[in-house]
Image (cartoon, rainbow, N blue to C red; front, side, top):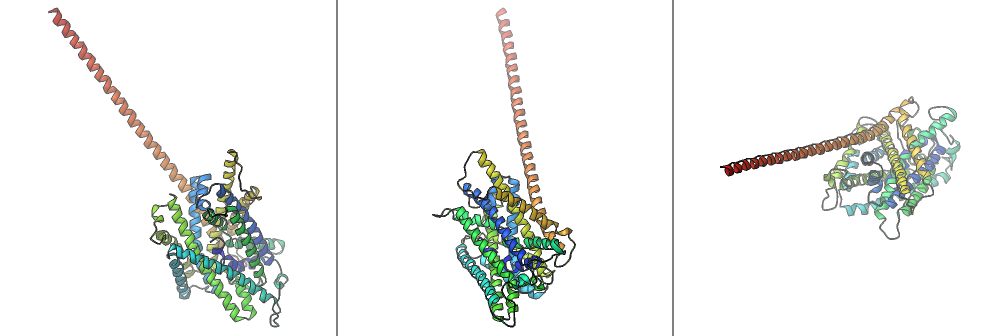
Length: 508
């Protein structure tokens, strides 16, 4: 449920585009860099969760508690939307992998079938889904290790018809690709774009890892820090080894990795098994990658729909989203979240390779914004702890410097996604890929400002109503006082009249 849902997304298909942009050395550096970045963000979130334990602290409540309601509202809904968009992203990835790149009835039919399977799994009883989730997560780990074994076999086998062996592609065509420009600057641009394409493999892993740890922290012998460290170690080893095996399967000059520069293309594993001449092995690799993508889609629909239900239970979303049936399925949240799946039908207007990139850059930009908010939350948490003179029991050796590194890196990555629009289109690059990044930033900003504006209006209205009530009460008290004063004056005049009558009687 943590690293499991992302297996099959960037590791298999997205890795090919990253490899084509930067070359094998850039791909390895990118995974090392993002693994360090994820570790810094994860341990920061884990430290906050350890001292402010809650069932959904990492995804929802911590930002509300340590920053502001405005920031908590905007980032919580952006996380839900982004996790929901991961579902059509996975469906589109499956279509790209099947080489269904051209709009048509074939791709529409297959997308409908995959969407129906994903939605059907999420309507199963909650206990049944969780049992199947464990099975599919284990299956995807088997798929990943099997593909790495295939890569090793193809690299070392003796085939006179294919003299390419081992790390031949590191020397021919070379370790770095010149992207958009010549020389060192082109190799630097290739490294940057490779990094932007690689982060899809780890986006939202810090939040999901800590959330998983929060749910299991009550178990004996378990702790959030131990769980997150182990998960990060597994992720680091698995992703680095997968990226390394991808570099020996295909050269970065193979045009099928990017569908001739359109966007995402074939996986390096598909290219490698295809070029090996082993047809059965190629079919097995294609089937495993397709199964992994579909399984990831069902996982992300479950995660996003449960997040919406949890937001409703915490009072941050309409109450109808927490309604569950007798099988403990929040069916309204599942139905509303599944509506984002229809974004896959953008493939009927343009190539699925381009749609894959549009969705990818929206998701990665949203992930960077989520990491930025998590870092701000940690910084505010540390200030609160220091003011209270509390010594945290659990603290990573990387903190607090790791969070500051992650904050700066996430801001730079967001800026790089946004700045793609100013680069002239050329050679496997489309500046329109920055449009989804602008949509993500604009959506986050609009939600923040709207919540701030509406909250301010409500507060001002409440103050005006309170002031009006005070004025009414003051007027009523004043009127009552005037009535009492008039009554006293009347009684005084009546008393004076009685005294005059009495004196007149005595004189008579």
